[in-house]
Image: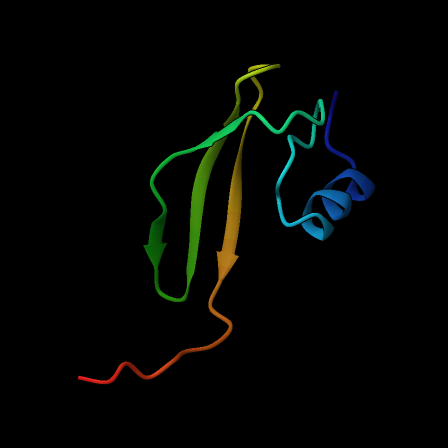
Length: 66
């Protein structure tokens, strides 16, 4: 099954909780790689063995008190 724009949007609307291919909640994420305001994380489904990257973008910041 190929990802469609509709399937991608459903995955994003659900905050990436379930596999976009089979719907399983048995997913595993790898290390987040960060580079200049964006990041990606490899994700795999333990049920259907599909793999994909979640892509993140910087959308804000919070000050940390010392």
